[in-house]
Length: 301
Image (cartoon, rainbow, N blue to C red; front, side, top):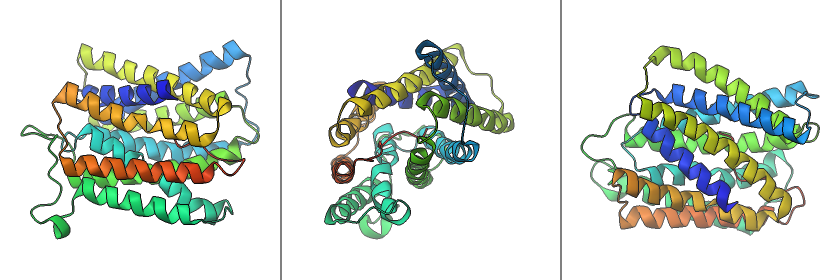
């Protein structure tokens, strides 16, 4: 899981670098296509079938997962919010899952859920810093810099939270699809669906990427493809609480990579927010681990 989290962080970095010359939709399309190729290759090596038995379940998982991918890559394309802060908000998915599971999966709500929600919401407030609480113009991310481009910091934060919400819904849909389909089949069909959708969206902003950014696009796809496999293997080997906790290494790794690549320096308030969101996620993961049907925390995109 440590390997998977680090590879997801690398995907986040490469995706942001690639949007220097390529559109975010093009970057996402390449990531999805490469992910489909990775799933296909692994299925062939393991002798797993890619045939779908429950087409409706796979369709809905693919549709919601694609929504999550759209929001994720749109948020990652913004340079008005530091990479570490963006990834922190993207990792709210376990908390949303803890809230939605009692409603849709008939899981009992516990005090741990309330604690997780409280910690994470406090963390989001510290990361986003709304103007009505902190004064001024609200979110003014230290990692943005004078030459920032892309969506505003506030819009980036909103889209990142939407991505986390849609990821949590995709995880619940994954439980249904996983009853009849192989892991490789689910990943393959989702990736193809996402690649086709992103390909259409990229037509509205056609740009020829530089050689460096094209390499980053492929690298993002490879990183995400193998990260997904590493995460799946981790949940097969160990309890969800221990594995899910390690997944938050992606937040720390993304912040460090952002600092190294872009000179981003989140302030003390943002760092405190990252810690609280991570703590809330860990509490929600540990709560779900009491159930034999615990779900993984990532990664619809």
